[in-house]
Image (cartoon, rainbow, N blue to C red; front, side, top):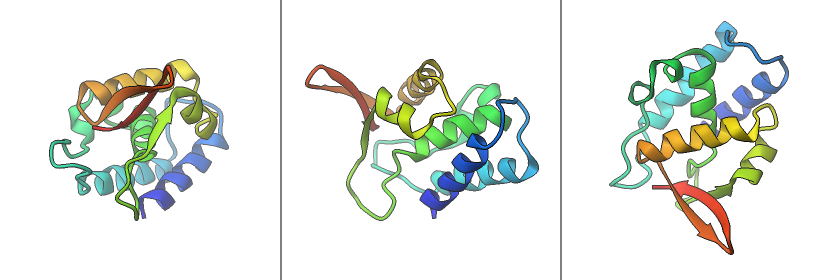
Length: 129
């Protein structure tokens, strides 16, 4: 279900110009996905995803959509295998957002222990903490 919600939210976000205001449907999708992610504990030492753990700017609206969408890329879905992405890979899957914005969101997710960075062949990747 998370993947379906994330894909619906992503397609809604790609089809409109950047704006700090989300449509009511997009806002509903953000909170539906965030609520679902809250119920998933990827690993025992990983905190449960909750928008209240982020600055106010990322607790609603476009900021909430961005942080939720980036984090949803790492959710395990039906497999128990963790996913890892580089900044370039995430930028390809999220073409609406600049790399700098994605990098900021990744840093915020790392600082709250949702993700952890690692290097592989000199390239930086992120995966669930």
